[in-house]
Amino acid sequence: MSEAVANSTSILKLVNKTMELPTMPEVLVKLNEVIASEDSSSDDVANVIATDPSVSTNVLRIVNSAYYGLQVRVSSIALAVSIMGFGMTKKVALKAAVFSVFGRHRAEVEHFSPMEFWRHSVMTAVAARVLGTKCARFGSAYAEDLYICGLLHDIGKIILLEKATQGYTQSLAVAAQTARQEIEVENEMFGFNHADVGSVLGVKWFLPEDLTIAIRYHHAPDKDPFHRSLSSLIHLADHVAWSAGMPSTHGTLAPSFQHEVYDQIGLDAKQVEELLPRIRDEFEATSLPWE
Image 1 (cartoon, rainbow, N blue to C red):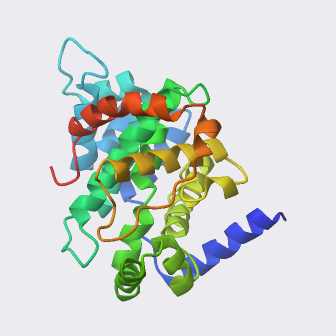
Image 2 (image 1 turned 60 degrees about the vertical axis):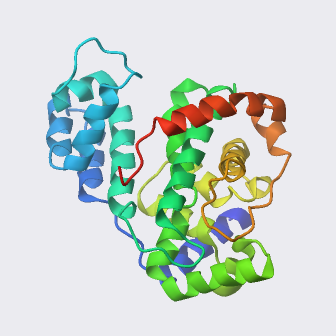
């Protein structure tokens, strides 16, 4: 067993031993089962989606968006599924489920505003998708995976806030008061950090391996032994969000930035700067969890 795999296994056990992570929503469980069956039709998938109003609404919103450019408005879930395909439908369902489970409005605590957190997460997701489509290493077919990875990169912070409230709020206070990186303080206090927690959720929710690993290494892409290009892209997208005045926490230091990520993804700083207006426009056109 490699050192990286062994370390991942120990983190998985440590996080699971420390806190109970949210289970995958029933609609995703059933959707995975239906899509995995070769005999499933669009109607079968639609019947599962129809049981969850949030997922249904998002599927119809996406299929009727400018992305598909349809001349007639689609109101049938089955037709929407047939247009989008099973793969895209599953990704839309995952995003809706994430917002349903984690996007509820919560009271603010010192250094953490749920609304600011989700603005940061969505901005990172949009930046990852826009930047990724300009990289030969990713391409447009991967765009929604990049969005999901960006959306979930800091999900461990929400989980820590819910499952280890006192310890996490204390770690934020220490990081702010001592001007140290949040992830450094988390490692000292918990033995793991929010990126580790997010990656364990990814394992529990059966996310693709590359997304799960990129979530874990998005603060240290140079240490990613498997998918360095993807973790580098999320690292850069996270930096774009912080630089745009959309931090995930407030009164804390922005994460340290590794300039080597430009080489890893094949974009330079000037190209990224030129894409910022598009990133901002797409972010403004994106629905947020509380809207």
